[in-house]
Length: 193
Image 1 (cartoon, rainbow, N blue to C red):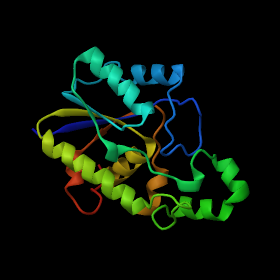
Image 2 (image 1 turned 60 degrees about the vertical axis):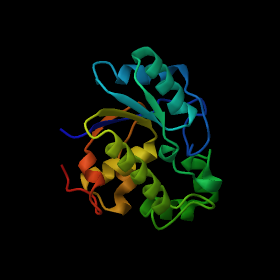
Image 3 (image 1 turned 120 degrees about the horizontal axis):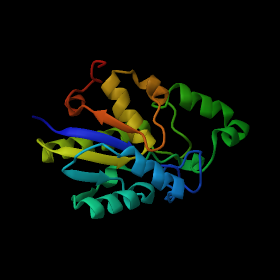
Image 4 (image 1 turned 30 degrees about the vertical axis):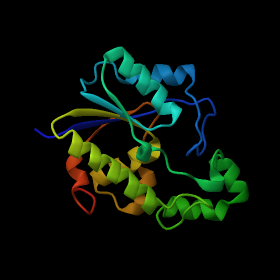
């Protein structure tokens, strides 16, 4: 038996939509409820792993305390840093950076937001963090509590999508997804399931 990984995205945040990136927003009451509801009937897990940002880590801490499971805070699973676009909505960016936003949507690997983190660097740190987790918990059941960008990256890889289709992957607030750790061992994306 190999590691089993589930991915849980954080719930709704106080600052709402837009590109939240490295901004450390708290969950709303609805966000807490969304995350609790997402886990009803799910699991069990042997360990919890969370991004350090409070929209993930606060819930992970509560879950660890209520279940007695160990919690690992993994800094490399934080969200993509959007540079000057952090905290801005797509509607706002369409008024000031329409061309650059369009290029980013069409090819996020080829077009980094101004002063943002390149997708290739984001991908490298995310995959390295996941590979470390799989190596450490080879036989374990792991719940990773994280961000939309991290989950899009992992799920696109699992589905065998080319890089330019990364942003097509839908990951709603408090959505729970299974992830095949075998996808981490391959250089190119996995074959579609």
